[in-house]
Amino acid sequence: MVALLFAGCGESPPPPDSAEPVPEPAPVVSTCGGEGRLEATLSGALSAKLDWPDAALRCESMRRPDNEGVRLRFTGDVGDERLVIIVAAPSLAASATGPGFDAVVTVTVEGSGRFFSTPNLGACWADVARNDPLGDASGDHVVAGTLSCVGPLGEVNGEGYVDLQEMRFSGIANWDNS
Picture 1: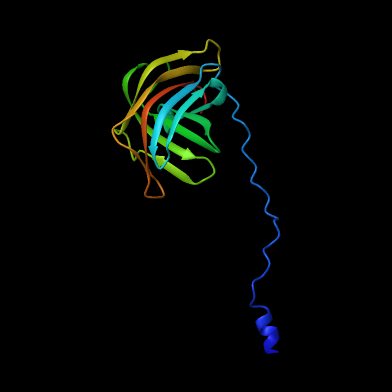
Picture 2: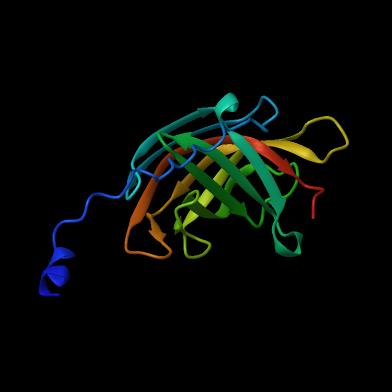
């Protein structure tokens, strides 16, 4: 009986290699209408030089709560990870341009649960150089400009941070969606 008890204490054989590889995300399909672009430098918990042309960039937008401004969402790949950058500009209106639109910025690594964001307005601002209708009845506008922040974006659920520098963007904002 003692021999049977100790027989189970030896090294067990390694488990069979049954783990299936995690599928890679589908390639980003541009939804930027030929006008998309995002360039930025990230440092800190995420380190990358982003240079996403229209073909490598997904652009989405939605009105903010109570139809105050807009959220611009930019999605692209960095190595094996998919990053999402959301710029929320509550005081930006259709066709408005100019310097200093307050912005809240969020950077997330899709599927990881990691979020980096400004805590409130006043930490980042967008200088909007272009906010032109596409010429159809869709309500879509090409919105382009630069984004600056006075400090890094803190990790919402951790201790890290991301410093977002030299961000230039061009995407599509839809002012008619709700």
